[in-house]
Length: 175
Image (cartoon, rainbow, N blue to C red; front, side, top):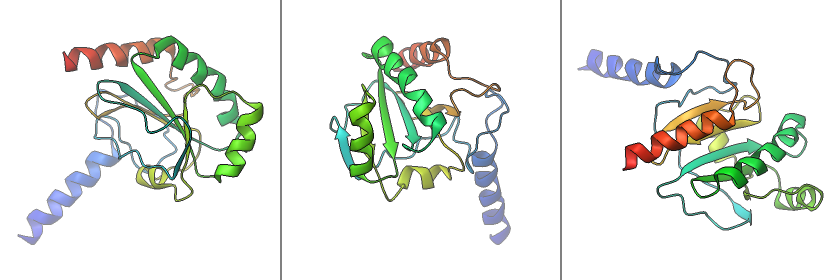
């Protein structure tokens, strides 16, 4: 009985640590590789732009970011463009672990045309064991993480084509 429990635990840990063979090997900068696995629950402390969005039947991109992070700031125009291009099929949520006051001040000079929230408890970051930001999860309509990591990574960049493919596959799975 104890051996079976240990094996089950080892299998679960291995499944979360190693991506499915369908996903490219890359540096994730997160302690848990969720690609091909159920996404963590989206938890925030306060919505600063928009309310909790309707995500049923849509692909969700969660960007874990901070105002002080140069790579995070560089990603914002691309997130705005993706929201405009894929808006009816894609929900983008930016979640910062900073204070609402800090993020609101930042948003006065930086347009963010998608849902923005803060979570000082960093529940999503802890669920993924984020080691560096920006850390992005792209979640299909069935709640499965289909892409994870740094969007600008040379190993596996997140592109318009990749997002379009995830959206198309998500629609086929749902239909």
